[in-house]
Image (tube, rainbow, N blue to C red; front, side, top):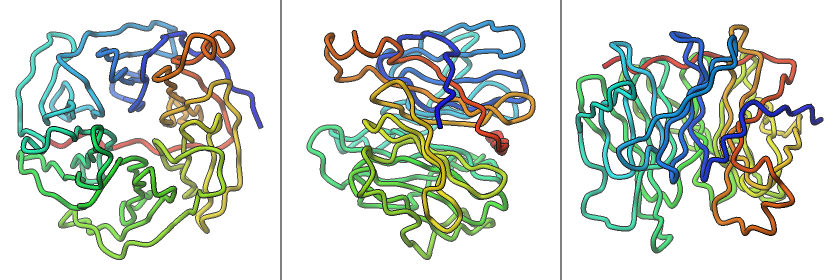
Length: 290
């Protein structure tokens, strides 16, 4: 299946972290290495971007306004309209090779953000939970490249991928404590053309995953089997999220990172925001409660 449409030809160096914000009726995403934050309003077609104070890796709207932001080396509050930023906590300051990467809020409005080792490739990064009061707690250790963080409709299952392991895992998620347990493999993707990157969940319990260097987005059914494949016209899709007023449009970010000019000439939509209507609805993310 492939009815993918161009939403905006952003030419992002590394588009990521896409989400739908019902508060302003807009799709938001980040260009991590381009150091810009993007906003697109489907109702009007208006698109704008903001220069970010560093590499913004993932983020979420705050209940009180503005964003909670996971920059490469810190968690912070951030207002793109004014540029105001206030650091909450540094991320792994004693490890020069790691940075924050993928994240999403849980159903209670806490931010779960995971890191990656961008230098040596060792499994020495972590996944942390940021509570509304600013407390930061490590919930997963031994991580090489955190991705695919998303939550089931009832919030009791957290999905996560350490990308080089080529699996999407599921954890029991304690709603009260924000802690994980019962780790198991939800989907084995070793036979797929790409690697598991960013994910989201639909209202029927399917996990939609962008396959890095796989030219596709797939739906993983509740039983762990891939039951839908959406081909995309670029090599490096990075993340996906349902949006629009009916939550029935799947938005897909893409990357030009590490792609030479000859390859880019053959895929002019690399770095664009894409979309498809796959026939199912997604779920709204919970704003950060702090």
